Image 1 (cartoon, rainbow, N blue to C red):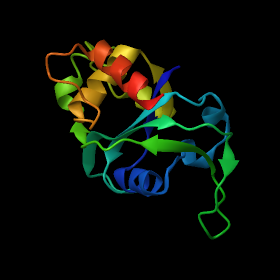
Image 2 (image 1 turned 45 degrees about the vertical axis):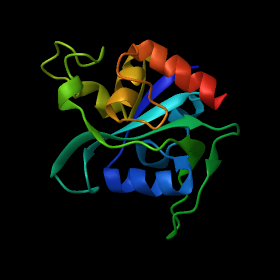
Image 3 (image 1 turned 180 degrees about the vertical axis):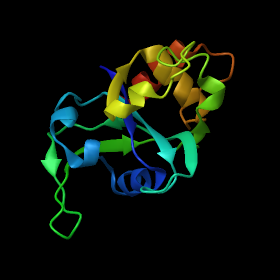
Image 4 (image 1 turned 90 degrees about the vertical axis):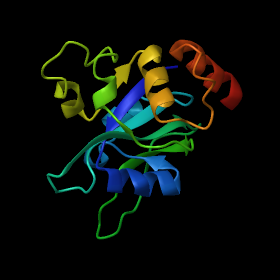
Length: 159
């Protein structure tokens, strides 16, 4: 099992979350093929609305990839992006700023946004646990629980 960060505007994430799927890199299939059923994915949204510059800089969805293969969806107008199905957890958006010093891929890095340019990247279990706790995921344990223990609990509850 791997944990992933995907990048999309919050309004695009909301569409996928409402319909139970994820897309990355403007519908490309190759990045989605790296993800396997059972993997966790959190979306980071640099902006609220695609094509705007008003920053959001928050994690906006967290879920677990369902069984099944990458497939083509139909967004209309001839746009058929590749997707994976995801079971999204009830969670609240969480700004990244309070987590910057704690996440392995941002801690101590003045250019902390660099990894997000790839659209999808793997992160350690401990990072996903911190993100889940910040999002107050409905499966969250009491605050005294260590982040890695939290993710193990999420895994055991969703297996």
